[in-house]
Length: 212
Image (cartoon, rainbow, N blue to C red; front, side, top):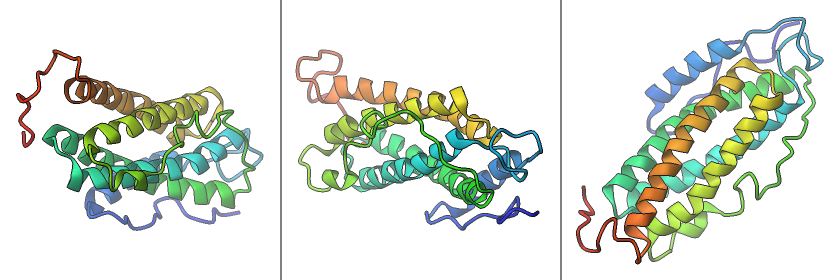
């Protein structure tokens, strides 16, 4: 029985970076479309289980929220270094979203029942709505206050996938999330100390070049 969505098929990107997103998604999807008869998910069509289904269904809105917040930063960030970080979030999480959506369709079509990551919405870092950032006075500090726990939630989700999931591409993506978002968390915490903590002497007020 064939898959409901063949390997190599994917949706068009909804971001301006369509070429890069499409290329990365194709590479990721080709790597993750393998199947076999010895999977633990009860399907002959795709190597996936309930944890994989839970991960992909939770990570799609999680990435969408991050991209929405980062899109706001592209126009509202005061510091160029935060704008650059936001550009990376939009670029790479948009690429991952393209893959996640395709994997979701394949997993659902294969009849894999959704399990549970064992994480609350708060533990997933989904307590805030990116729309809250639209009118804040100090955008940069508010963005990091929201995005740091959001990234920390993504790392918890990725660790849950690595602990119990079996889908090859989702496991590779989880390793990338842990590494890349861990690095971005460290960057944002450093920016917080420099720009948002009035007691910090690491970057005295007035010396930051906001455009550089």
